[in-house]
Image 1 (cartoon, one colour):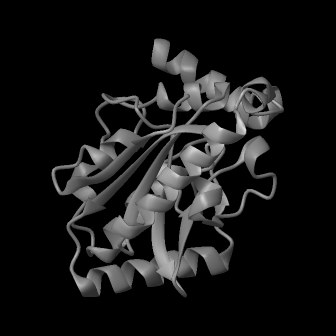
Image 2 (cartoon, helix red, strand yellow):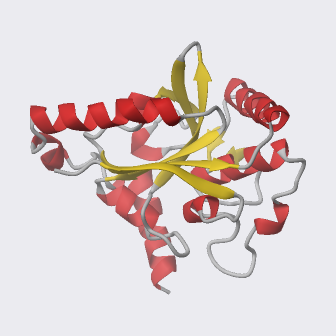
Length: 215
């Protein structure tokens, strides 16, 4: 019952019930704290491999509602896939509502995705992928991006033409593995499909680096 309530609360926020990401918290961050946090984010880049998953935890009410939908671990509220392109790390992620009015799959620089102005924790995780699987994953994600994949406001795991964040990451990984991850889809409990923590608690996934951006 609580999870159902949180789900509808999350939808309300995404549809515009929350119009900003807690500007009070943004103003409380000192220049010194920001510099320290961005330095930590910069240090993360040396550990990144293409195909890694980056998780973040937002500091606002939408993120709080989002992470409450996780099954076991509420550490993170959002995720995306990272690829090294021309010596820069870019994150592909599905997000909508007040964060992304255009609703299309985003491609953001790592620093932008991880900004400590809006996030207080990060996690870099890696699934066991071979080189050819990473190449296929990159192609899958690139095709989604070029097609302008839209965010799924209804969080319906069974629709492939629109996707929410963990669904996009999972289905991209699953395609690169020729459907080997289909066995991890949860249909026995709400929410159906795959939650954010399902991705990093997966038996084939390991933690690379975790950062706490707090002050």
